[in-house]
Image (cartoon, rainbow, N blue to C red):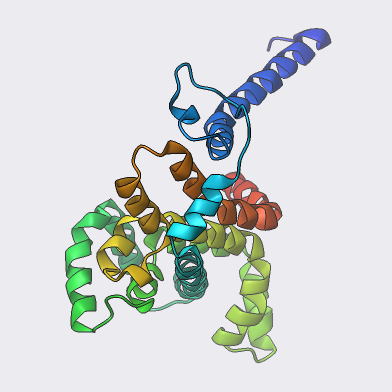
Length: 279
């Protein structure tokens, strides 16, 4: 075993920290430019060499967006769908994870293996049958058309099951001795102990639903049911040369996600840390 002098260890740690800082700074450059370009005067964002900061900041593009698009309606659609899918996903996937982890029923292992094997199927393959099914159920252009297909996820079931597997069975046995049923154990014991992983899953689902473009574009054909990403895509078609206006739309689309992350980052980081420490 090689014993390095203390000053070399400190130098190596400092070099790693500097490298991590530079990589983080580099990752932030596109976001900073997007924010800066949204406040640039018309045509300045397309200049070469590109500018990182505006010569004379303006909020005119945000005002233009509010005049041309029904942002409040699109924002409401995105918010309802993101929250609806996230809450439904937490309930359904945590119940499935609890069943596969703690309940003994015939065919549990083969069923879970089949469930995991479906992860190799691309999501685009199932889009057409799901679309036809929703059409027969008259759920197109409705919130349920997006919430119902998004409420179950194999990855989410696997994630929650792995977390439940690490919780001791003695907790369940003690609760059963006290007369608690499976629903009471799930609701009163397992869920409160699983807040970090549920916060992580909720954030993943919220961000994924908020940013989703293809499925809302397929299901929502009426303009008043568009989500923010879909509405932003129509803006790109009409104002493809107005880079500053498009960047203002991107900022308004990203802003709620940043707020949600800041609110849940403590639980999110804890969930990632716990997940990374498990075998």
